[in-house]
Length: 449
Image 1 (tube, rainbow, N blue to C red):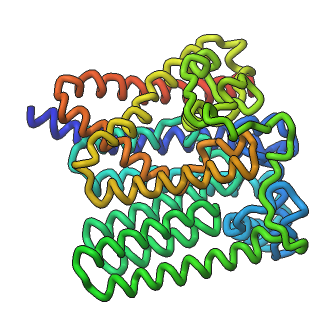
Image 2 (image 1 turned 180 degrees about the vertical axis):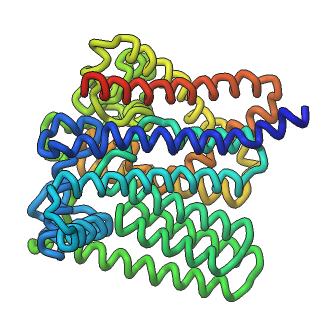
């Protein structure tokens, strides 16, 4: 019994190693190699507006300044990732012994995305170890990040998502460290990662609110003036970040707030004015399709819970180029979507155990609620299917992981007989997800689709 228990303790580490390997192979097959012909958009069916992200990076590299936000599709984005990538692009250009092709430089940037994706996974593992000693719960949290296809895709894309995911996971990790074991260094690191993440993706400002709530809670519990000073510093930092962001990242010369333009395309418009849009979860339709696709089945794309869940698992892409010639791939995707319902099940289950919540549950739940409110607001302001993509949960996803994991953990602790069933379903899920990723890499390597 002791041997089996000790063996289980190593299982989360095994998941991390396999997750890292999956990212490296995926980046090689779908990331770096794809940029040999970087202007051929067909290579990027599993990334987000790649050519526009490349355009932003190249503008910064060529001019060492930010572009006017009204001049391009991706320009109304927080600039930190593009500054980092553009400056690196420029340095490589200037200091390389031989003139490098654009595609070669982009390959280097893709491998940086792979490193960021791996860093997110590593942070998730150490985060899981911080909140629980249960190897089963550690495996659940780590495995979701390690093998969910939509997160593996980040290892092969150019764009701000991998960078922001890494910084957000780091911010949440240090926030939990601060909650678990106080220390000024953890508070500073949590704040630093939050600020950096905010300047890569605006919704990451949620993390600063979570830190603020944490120090206010500590002041309420312990009545120490140092917590008031921390709260005041977070407020000042937050206001400064917002001011700089509005001034440079979003407001163009016209003075009008600007957002990405996906909502202007007729075939992406949705109708968030209907209550059914927010409460309808068309699981049968999603399982029938095997995917969430912006231009696909309207019963999937035009209801928020359905599209959120589908894009969480497989992203917002079309897989018809592989599901038609390989029907078994679609069957595999359908099974993964069915088993993956454990994730929202964990979130729902934890709501029924609110009497057992601690500060980590409350802070995580607050981040999720604020993130959802922001998504709803942007959907009303810019009613596009793309704006209901799960990527908008990047800042609070580690909180979602914890919240779901604790729900599953508490459920199986109360109903001990269900633990074997849930564990079997979960490990079946991550095994099938790994098979899916391997299948995609093999198909790309053999017939290049």
